[in-house]
Length: 233
Image (tube, rainbow, N blue to C red; front, side, top):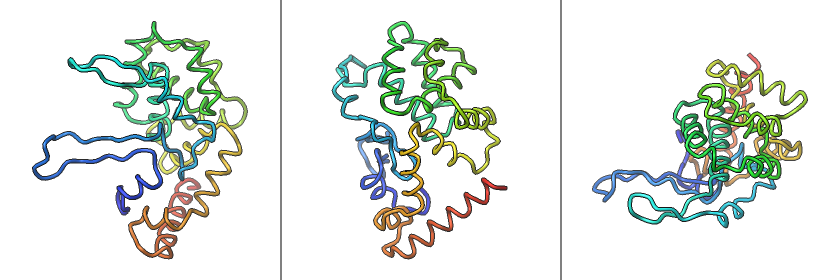
């Protein structure tokens, strides 16, 4: 994360951190450590996104001759959909393929009613819908039309997201707007806006890598101003 104290920011305020080995490390692979499913704008995740439920449903399967603990298929699908929609505002071929291949390989074993019920209960139906519709339009892995119909957001927010989502690669600075619009509940949207407008001192110090809260706020509002100018241009 350029211009920030990335490890301290992630550990204190995010849901995951990536640790990259350096020097004579025993393994060349980075470790992507998660203690939450997905991080939303300004740390304002939907209040009903229950990570603990996902951990209790984790299953043990054998991989490379060893037992490993992994998310159940429905939770893994939701995680990959949210990762694509929120972390990479519906862009990026690798994350699209992750989701499409999971559906293509395990579609018959997925209980789509659980997927849609869980997405709606967690207030992430809109984010799930746009991620699934994108990969279905592009790769046709077999997302049921009935599942898309249950998840599809209605009204002006859904129409605006639909318009923005179809202009992938041409959005410029409005990716931040996509993240906010993907929040299902208006109360969660307001929380995210408040968090972005008036972040906590510890967050701005960590985010912009400075011991001075004043300098952190100046950097933050300068960045917000740049984003707004791109959105309005």
